Image (cartoon, rainbow over all chains, first blue to last red; front, side, top):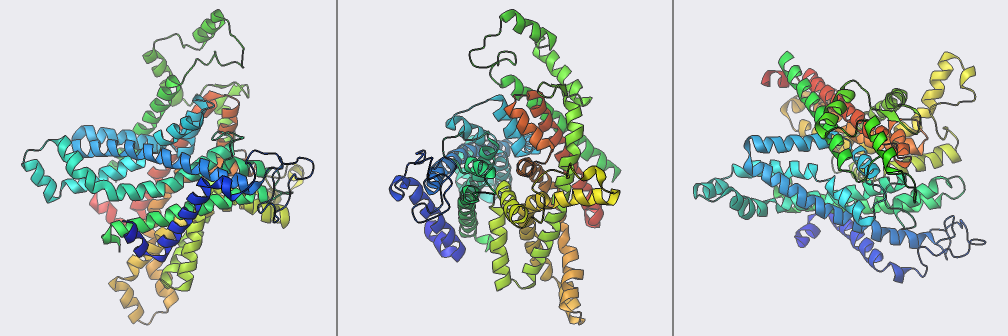
Amino acid sequence: MLIDLLRASRRARFGLGLLVVLCVVAVFAPLVTSYDPSDQIDLATRQLLAPSLTHPFGTDFFSRDLLTRVLHGARISLSVAILSVLLSVILGTAVGLTAGSVGGAAGAALMRLVDTALAVPRLFLLIVVLALWRDVALFGLIAILGLTSWFHIARIVRAEVLSLRAREFVVASRALGLTTRRIAIRHLLPNLAAPIIVTATLGVGQIVLIEAGLSYLGIGVSPPTPSWGAMIAEGQTLLATAWWVAAFPGLAIVLTVVGFSLVGDGLRDALDPRTR
Amino acid sequence: MARFVAVRIAQAAAIVFLVATLTFVLIHLAPGSPFMAGGEGLVVPPEIVEQQERNFGLDQPLPVQYLRYLSNVVRGDFGYSFAAHRPVREAFLERVPNTLLLAGAALIVMFLVGTLVGALQSARPASKTDDVLSLVTLGLYSTPVFWLGLMLLLVFGESLQWFPVGGTHDAVVYPYLTALGKVGNRLHHLVLPAVALGLVGAAVTARYQRAAMLEVIRQDFMRTAKAKGLTERIVLFRHALRNALLPTVTLFGLAFPVLLSGAVLVESVFAWPGLGRLAVDAVHQRDYAVVTGAAIVTAVMVVLGSLLADLLYRVVDPRTREAA
């Protein structure tokens, strides 16, 4: 699969490169920079320093090294996004597979519920949930993001299941008298791997954007945990005096999401020969 | 046609009903009672909690509460905003037009820029222009909308000072302006937030438009048009673009929820007094009636938007009318 992806296109290779670099610097963040993300180095003399050799991204209002905070922010953003996508993929696949295999009125009813959830703009749904369950810890945030982003995965999986159900091998296994459950798990699920992997990869990028948005609004990852969105919010008030505080975390988000989009598109081309 | 419209309206109403039910369920799943909140270490005497619950009908059985809640929502009564000391509906009536103005302007930016970029790309597929533009659209698609807004603000608001840095109009000079000046002042304030919100969507539109154009360009009537000796520009814009606009129209319905979500963030960047900012402020003030009401109102807007898109599609594409 990885080799197919690398062979697929220059863009996919570039995306994969971005993600590898990102993961490496996130994992080895303490080795890359010599500062601590929450260390207020020297409030008197190091506050809001412009980018320089000692502080490549400058320093923030509390004299913290911005590069260090952006790197540690990568750890938070990536782990939140990957874990919540994992949760949403499990839920979405389960619901979509059930709705698709059972079919009939029950399946249609299940999809109506999914449509309802999709009618509320995602950010508003998250705002409602985060308003009611206040001050959630990091794992709470991951759970909430995962629980609110499986709806479109369920749609995609169900559509895929419906098209697979018309294929001969499924018809044959039904003729052999296999139970619906066995067909779903042993015959349909393996064939769903490709679209699910593509959707999940693109989904990580989207969740990075959503988590950044929530943290920017002050209802996501709460300070002093370094989060890209919250760092941009801090930079907003300093925009006229210290542009770098808002600029660099935003660039980090763009590069991350571009990476996941390129790899996702590349995977789609590599796994599904029809789109070539 | 009449039957189709009736069915779609019924479906839209069903979705709004389910959304209201969903918010009711969420409210009642949430931990704690609204009267227990208080601050840290603040203990509310149980008899007061009991009395307040009676006042707000929270001592009634759940089905009764549910029916009351639904009938309130249907009448457009979203309860009372404790933070602003006024009915939620009043606050909404003030804020919703601002959000719709912002989202509408962003929609125009999105379609104008998106179709233009997509058409340009499809004129010379796999050329330098195409490659550069698709890289730009990918970048835009991956950019957090609030950060894009801040960067536009930094460059065009703070540094170049071409545009104001926030609000819907200039409170100081506004009362002294002529009617035309007032419109101009509001438009001037609208540019940056609308561009920020619209550009992210434009990236998606361009991707759609490019694919749709390439699909159309392969068809026979395009070859005929070229064979007739029409110039490339006419073939591209009169023949191809017109036909390729069809799939893009379906994006209209899909774009609305995304724009409304984005508006929440953009409103915070540009101090735009819209529904999204109201909801976010309400979260911080624990003003729950505003938060849940805002979710229902945006769901209604989304449902109406997709209804409109469906109807529009049937108007622009006669083939879909026969099929139904």
